[in-house]
Length: 445
Image (cartoon, rainbow, N blue to C red; front, side, top):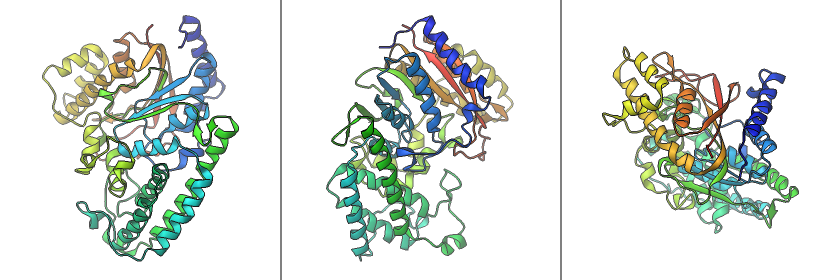
């Protein structure tokens, strides 16, 4: 358990201040954002910079060496998971997106590298020997999103994966298939939303689906081996299994409860409703159609794929049904939110409604998040203030007020310039952000 006191708060502030004072753009990590180890297995939207997560953990553990357990309620691709493992810490993670859970479970191991090399060779042989033209999946608009030759090739890959008896190995192969789907579908890779390429471009594309899968799986095996080697040298593996505890849950944060409380929360929640910021669900829709969801998590089922918008609708701000008292309740907890909503009076009513729906859901996450943290525990929130109606939504200030209203204390706020996070510079509703803020808070004792 963390020992909280004013002395430790001052030490933490001083350490973060020193990093910024030594180099004004330290937190941008420009030219220093290579995705090593498990970080590079899949191109997930708006991934956190691993080096930033590493520094946050480094500084927190320097002040509090007693830290043992980290949690990330919005785990995404598993950046905090991987960095926690590299430090030999216990980890608890959660996400509402089955693809994120697949990535996290895969990155958590086991790390049977030699066995995986043999299984990789075998799966390549099975794919090469498969002469079937049968398409293995069926979903609405399948032919819109995939050329027939791509469907046939993806089906061969899928059949080979399903013949693998070990679930941990299948998950590794599913991740490679997911990346292959992303690269070979008819959806443009320049956006996270599902947008088809022009018909002439689709027809003219030179796509080697099986060749792409083989390149991805070889690259992923190399990255996976690097992580296994690092963990093994650090004495963190026992016969290929990570020695510490890792808990991964597929659930809405608003209903989340981990088995044990943690010492530190490091997370980056959505910056707004997914439809107008980052459409994580749309980005995941096509890969998940080709993956056996029973290998992902017991809670994963076809309901997540009933439409291209379903996962995003389950995320924060996905429901726009707002109770009459909701806006006032939120503004009582955050006067800054009230001031921002007042500035939207001249804007179309839907804009304020989206903002209120998002902050209602974010506010509903506060109590579950605090409940997973031990008294005196630390919280690090990485946030971006997007624009709505030409005005910057003060997400950092509103979230601070939500947490302070629950007796948390704000220790520091760090601004970082985004130089390498894979996000669209703008979308059709609102410009996205070029800077982020890192909030450092402590839960009351």
